[in-house]
Image (cartoon, rainbow, N blue to C red):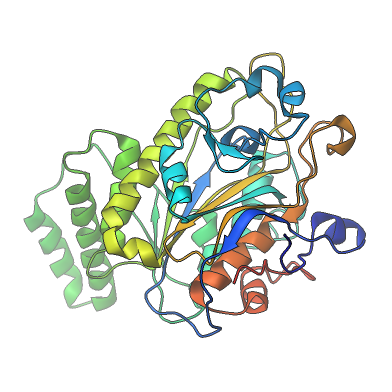
Length: 387
């Protein structure tokens, strides 16, 4: 089954014939009008380091999978999504949500201007530029004015990531092991600003409230990964909750011992998602979670039990308001003649098209409006039609 044609990587690079994004066991859930929807939340999880989409969402039904991946194909306990694709054994929460028709999984996606440089690729993914460092406004900052306004955003990070930088004001919070300062001192500092700089006083008080909420949410949770999910849920369900939360996950650069390292990484990711899902409660039905990485990894093992920097990869969307579920891909295959530069999974769909389509469907706006706002530098890009 096929859905509306998308602008594929081949079109972007060679202006060739239109490629359709195929839907593999993918079904529509509900219709969404082109009227902005109130109360919708977005959580963007960035897997820094290039997560191996062929391990996170392995194409177990591809006849060339085992031969192409070698030792990297040896993972027991995968969660089958259909005859073609499965989820990594440690992604139990994703698998549970998939069974509840709350998961949409994309494969063979990648940047419109692919690169195997971590820094360049992360910048392209986060800013949506045609070339690295061309844009200084992040894609999530551009999302903030869309749909129902005003929107607010929060990064669960030491500093505001490039994806959130821009003219819209955002905040950040990172758990710390430093002993908390007496609350009375916080209040006295705010009082110093009250007369001369009320705006700074307001910002300070807001930061103190954010810290207090974060410390409270982390109580009794021993897993750092689960703490992050619980923190995100706490903020999203608070009285002055942000509309967008960004979570950073590091350590996905698996050049060696990939099977063991990915087991730990995916277990932590699953813990974060499980805590987020549990903590959101009823708000899960109005939340879109996007899990993405800057690029994929090589199809074959590199001889050290790992894989090297690639291009095509996978993207995951979770939530109770998805308009489609299942696996969506224009699958290129894994045989040598089907690979990009005879080593990588071929990119058949721009990741920017997928992100714009997801945001559009979630916020109830037209895909072309989302593309214009989020990716002004990518002429000709079309958003995935997911409604």
